[in-house]
Amino acid sequence: MSLLPLADAQARVLQQIQPLGTAMVPIGEARGLVLAQTVQARENIPPFANTGMDGFAVRSADTQGATPDSPVDLQIAGTIAAGAVAERPLEAGEAMRIMTGAPIPEGADAVVMVELTAVDSPDSEIVHVNAEVGVGNHVRPAGDDLTEGTEIFTPGIVLSPAHIGMLATLGLQEVEVIARPRVGVFSTGDELITGPEALGPGQIRDSNRPQLLALVAEAGLEPVDLGWLPDDESVIEAALRTGAETCDALLTSGGVSMGDFDFVKTLLRRLGEMNWMQIAIKPAKPFAFGTVLGTPIFGLPGNPVSSAVSFELMARPALLKMMGYENTQRRSVWALADEPLLRAPDGKTHFTRVRVTEANDGAPRIRSAGGQGSHQLSGLALANGLAAIPDGDGVQTGDRVRVIML
Ligand code: AMP
Ligand code: MG
Image 1 (cartoon, rainbow, N blue to C red):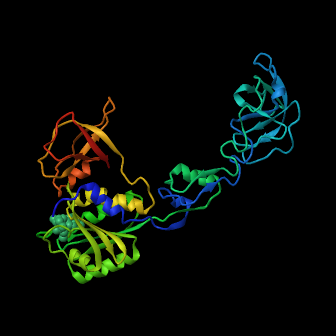
Image 2: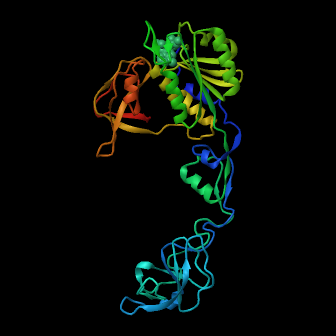
């Protein structure tokens, strides 16, 4: 079987994935989801003219000529706290104490900040104003942020914390978004143990399932733990059926490479419509994608580094597309190799696990993060980037390399 270029493999998967339908979710659960409605300001924001400073609400004209040496004295006609309103309009020759965010009283057109005023005692009825202020000084007019009727958000944006704050300001409790995909993950293999018990002969611990569940959660998707399954055809079949019914997508790891005993492959051939691929990358060459009972399923390779890299390159973009993302790519940067990253020509792009560090001249530097075997999870755990080393002999110190930031 000839090796498939990575971009072709990714395109094959992406073209079969469509965004999920929409759902109403509380705004507190909407971060990272894609907006599916337009959002308009239903009222002015801020809703009323208010003060940006603690001080005194005044008529600008009354402050004319005021200086520290010849202050203007105004009669204190009340206090307005945030959340309160003045009991009556401000008259000429008066000032009202006002706290940040409180509504400007009728009759006032400016605020003198407290630092430019003086009172002789706390219960004094006179305030000395030490500076002249213009109309509108420290006044935040109604609609200064948004005027009623303004369309602020359109469908397609990925909701950030600031968007959530804006939605709350606008009084929205719920918002219409593309639904968050539920992604089921299970692991198979009689060699795996999941508990704390000591390893028996030939046994290893199940690391793929926790790692994949964490990757799913990190991408903003909803992880669904479908558990560990023994190499037993009927158990795996039941789990595949339940998973396909209850999840929007499924991830399996193991059993997609050549010549193994896993039943995952047998079952996917029988229950699913699968596309078995050999991708021109290392690690994560074997990969399968298709649907099982109508649900998209990603058959990731079993080796722990391979399954994670396969998730990054193949599953993550597709699952983000399912969640409505237009940009499904991780951030990537050009970095300079700080040491040789050698490899042998084999027709594949190698994704080398690297440590990316900032340098004073702005160009990040990379070094190998550890062992590069597909079973050597420590190297991946210590890495914060995947360096794409093109087919050939590798790169030398100082060479430029494209790095996917993890
Ligand atoms: P397979 O493709 O099932 O033959 O798996 C390839 C390699 O990955 C084998 O060494 C498996 O033991 C290992 N492997 C498979 N699944 C897991 C898992 N969930 N956790 C850790 N290693 C695994
Ligand atoms: Mg296996």
